[in-house]
Image (tube, rainbow, N blue to C red; front, side, top):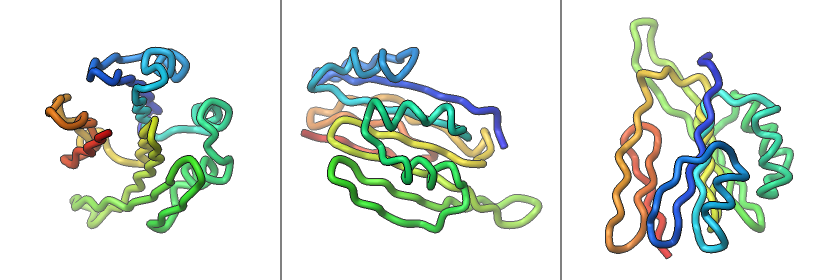
Amino acid sequence: MNKPENRYFAITRSGTLHRSSGLTDALVFAGDEGYVWLDYIDPNADTLEELDSSLGIHPLSIEDCLNGDQLPKLDLFPTYSFMTFTAFEQSPEGLLAHELDVFISKRFLITAAIGMPKESRFYLPWKTPSRGIWMPFAWDHPICYTR
């Protein structure tokens, strides 16, 4: 396990990126039409507790995220979707599996990497194409959010 790490970002409708000190700061900066990306590395219950009250994430989704041993799945909720992926990594010890949990809605993207070695993670630079905002994402897969 890695040392828990949290990163909070807000993106305004015009594409301005703001690294925030916490969830509340990110939500304020994003405003009513912006987007928030919350990135958690090996989160714990205290870290994810704020998601329930601030963003309406169901407690069972948070519990599944913290379990760290979920099968890949997609859960659809009225205001967001929760996805669990398994990433594989070849190592000298053999094939390793790591969990990546993703919450996504019209207003936010939340990523939680469970047990992923730091050297396996990197983030793409921010780009603002004419149609949408390219979100940084673990590994080499960008997510494009368009309006």
